[in-house]
Length: 278
Image (cartoon, rainbow, N blue to C red; front, side, top):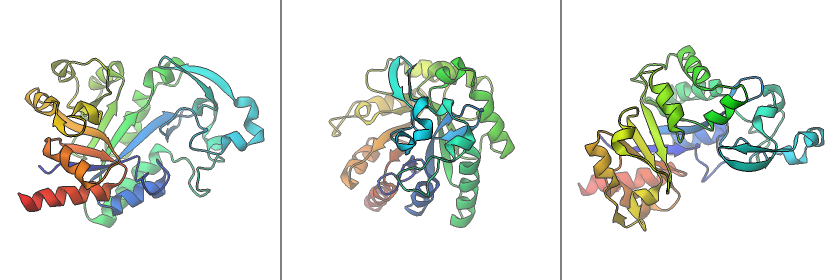
């Protein structure tokens, strides 16, 4: 099977991340699948945003009506300060603008509708990698995410395998719990310095999503992780490529099953070059 090109947060090499416009562009650039980050509003609505804190991706610091919402929170062991998604209702989030004024924060429902529309337009099924962000934190403030994610997928007829839909997270406790709730394939994301056992992961997940330094040392020398993961029965989706065609080719040569990339066209070109050589 040809390695997947996955539009990481859409096409942030060209347009603001995690916006509907960015996801549409990723499809037009040739992405086989899209990657989206989920957090939850105060009123329990799943929305698409990488950060639980809103000042990097919206104009909330410049909105005087929300000045008193600025606060500090510890999320997954990290002290953060700013404006947090779980302190805003969906209606309030709708009033915030991304760097481009027309790009509001999408809901998960809206993203799923976009994937269906783009699949129909492109004449091919567009996959989706759904990253559940900070699920333990959201559960601790009364906003459990697992049931909401699975219920939304069920509403769209996507709660069973066969739709090129993957659920992923860095939180292994969350993934272990979800594995008992769904047959959808799961991805254990792993970062440099994070302890994990491939055979342990294989007990509850179907793939790993390693940081690129875990796959290539210096982006030239294979670490052996891909081969070890494959022997354990796990697919490998590496993140996140922001370089040129040669970088993408190096990871494809390493045997990964998919590439998260900020510019799908680069990885598509690299994959085509390798296919021509083969």
